[in-house]
Image (tube, rainbow, N blue to C red):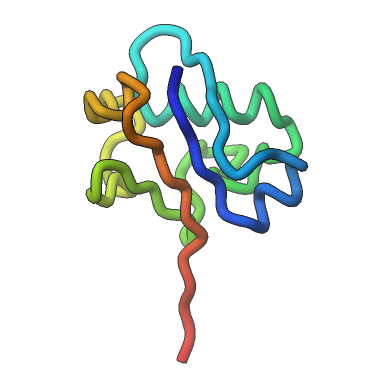
Length: 98
């Protein structure tokens, strides 16, 4: 069971709780978590990653265990505390501007 925390705007869109628990088949990778999240909440398709390319949207970041995982390959296995359910994967909406 992987714990996922969504930012408020995506939580509202999906009508989801602050923290979700997802079953991720196979190896617990970032891509696997996003696949499971989009399967459970189809309204989120295209909001976190581009529908055509599958790449992360520019203003979306992924954090776990106090590390930025945003630039890790999507097929890399998540940190052990996340896969064990002790720590959540955080999906954060980044900000820009001046």
